[in-house]
Image (cartoon, rainbow, N blue to C red; front, side):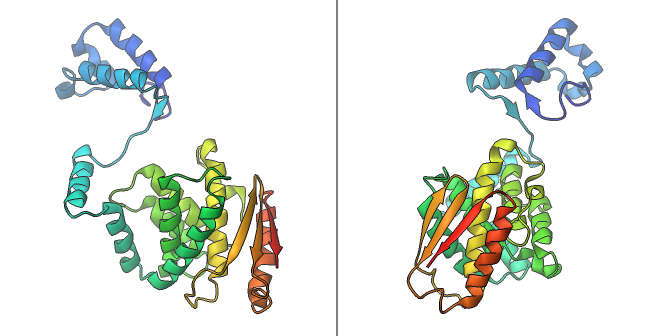
Length: 276
């Protein structure tokens, strides 16, 4: 549709309606070559178009994007996973951890801390779906993947790897979300992290980034301890973080990190209050 100047590459209902008008005006399948349809596809193109149009209308789809992988590849991965009672995505994450020498014990500690936080804010921040939990878990496991390239700016290197690597089992949208959380898990928390994303996804990913950032910060000592006891009090644009009495007194460096984090989050008009 891009070559027809109907859309920028995204398949939309409006573009489908416009293409239907052009097809009807043509009248014959043999003329589809004028639209760039290969000769061996011209006889089946109208039927395929009718099915897709029916799906758009019946399921009230507004837009659709294409995936690089073939349908048969996705089905084979899914079938293989079901036979072995495992999720192909888990195998993909494990393969990435091994290939890029990720500290899995540290990643697990960060994951447990992030999930402990997520459970306290999921309802308030509307993050209570399986997809939210999955992307949060896997971002924590892979947040240091970029260290294999360079310690400097490793969060950006990690985001690039996750965005453009071939990750069996993952959609392009999920890869973008995963890359966004890894990109935003440390240092400056700017709007550039969310450039190119669907505006509707930004608030959700912004909240998830905050959870990853806090989990990484609380596990900064890298002693792989269990998540500290803390209570979170979320609001629309803020978070109050409350620790048990004396916990922060014994960890002045963590307190300093939290104070720095408060300044980072303020750049996105997000307030962080630490109570102890």
